Length: 282
Image (cartoon, rainbow, N blue to C red; front, side, top):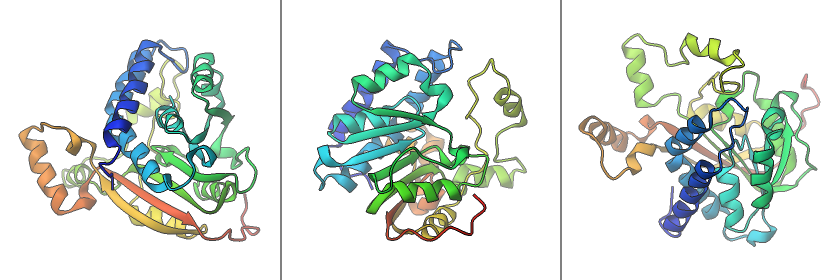
């Protein structure tokens, strides 16, 4: 869980990074969607603070300037640049289409973050074996519309022995989804989003959640690919807000009694071996 030590400092770094994106918009796909990107960052603010604080807690015993972190699905780079400001060596991996954006390239360069383009569907990361002390995937795994296991296999390959994988994503069994199912409603993206996803006029290239996992499923994937799960917890961004409306306060009471009802899951694994995957088709 998040430690209070250095939390205010980390929150300040994250807030500064978000406001910098407002002052110098990126507009990843050149669609005039800079305002939408900024609104998304504000919505994810508490999740970014949580992630950076967790990374600091997990890795602060290392020499920061000798500790390498890879963020997969770095998007606008809030986590990557914040971690760099804490002294870590950071690499960011993103889609080719996003990496072509010169403003994004300049942003990462100014912050000392190495940006590498690629596509996870190719099941290959452009890094040597055992390069990283930690690999971070936040709000990424649920966007993959293909088998994620070869991706995790690649993460295992580029992580040093004893290094960690940090996965944060929606909890497939959160309170809101359970209530929607009880009301006969879908917990998946509405069909209208499918039309936006294939329409080049909208910034929805990676916007769909093709599958949201239960925490035990995330653990099963990691344990089957050479990781020992060392931490699992659930997180609700709204619970960190100072003032909650009555309905949210009631929801918080339920989530405090039953943490698995919270919106997000965080699963951390430590690499214990590199299994033999020669029999796999990919």
